[in-house]
Image: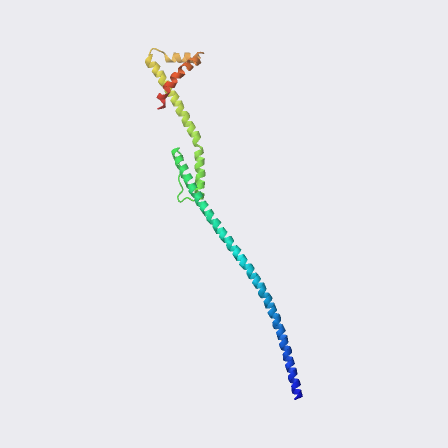
Length: 191
């Protein structure tokens, strides 16, 4: 019986030692799991902060994109209005151009540049036309005056009179005297 008790005590002691070792190992694993869980909770909190920050950033970007989209729409509208007005002005000035089909901001911008280049030539053409019209007006006016003089004084030799006027020193004085008369005749040629 004593041996049985000793063997039983040794077996129980061994079981107790094994149980203690298993408990220590389980406690170590539990402590490690608690630390890992705490670390995971910290990481989860950081991830939530990152997600919230990213969400705010995404929302800010969406708002900014919406603003830029509105601005782009305004720019497109302004560009189309400007191009249409310039196109009509160019047509009135004799410049031929076409409005692009289904225009976007890029095609309108390049067409606007082409139109502006073509319209850059208008002032020189316009000046040449004005110079020609002015010259024709002066010629017509001079012919009219000479015709009036010839009609009222058919006996005068206009060529001789003109030759003498060019050579005369008093021509400047006479021009000043008739300038008032010229002002009264001018409205006849402005019509």
